[in-house]
Image 1 (cartoon, one colour):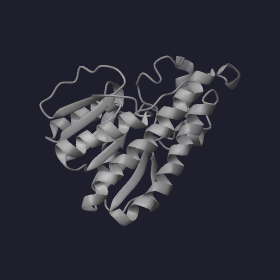
Image 2: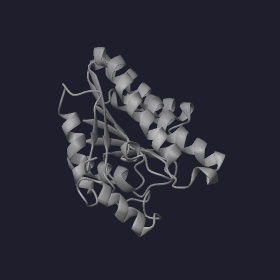
Image 3: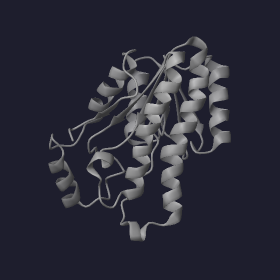
Image 4: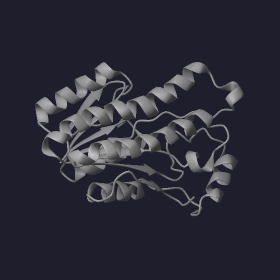
Amino acid sequence: MIIVITGTRKGIGRYLAEHYLGQGHNVIGCSRDTTTLSHSKYYHYYMDVSDEKDVRKMFFGIKKNFGSIDVLINNAGVASMNHSFLMHIKTIYDIIDTNIVGTFLCSREAAKIMKDKKRGKIINFTSFAVPFKLEGEAVYAASKAAVITLTEVLSKEYAPFGITVNAVAPAATKTDLVKNVPENTMNNLLKRQTIHRYCEFHEIVNVIDFFINNDMITGETVYMGGI
């Protein structure tokens, strides 16, 4: 398969890239910063997913070099935990641009390629911050709520072309997004989940594989850990 994953420099994106490379797939990744991931079937673009010119250039290159795309995983995301009184406008725009605009642009350009063969899978990343209405994450939660709505609408628009669009909301996971959050805050969050522990990377892969291997599921969001 030809699998495109955004935000592969570290964290979940890096794990996903290594996982699918290990299965023998061609993986195209991207990030705003340099990457140390090196593999004969891995191809990397240095770009900003919210920059339309960058996104179009990447997908033009993918179509030229590979001819098609089987799976797009919109993993790239930005988070910031702060009281709304203290949120800087630059941070607000960065969250919105990456989480909403980036997801939309990559989905649109990937779908244009997928529709030619009447088949494709798009998997978006949302967050447990949406149903939990987490204090201190007003803009982040709002951006991830928008991703859910985007997923539902695009699933209807792309269905005639054989493309499914779904979303996964991992439970609390040990990534850079939470490393600076106070321990007591994270412990309180884990208690709010139905399953009171951190989510593991391989468990996220299980949900993504479920979407990849199912042609009759679209417009859905899976909340991991229980809400």
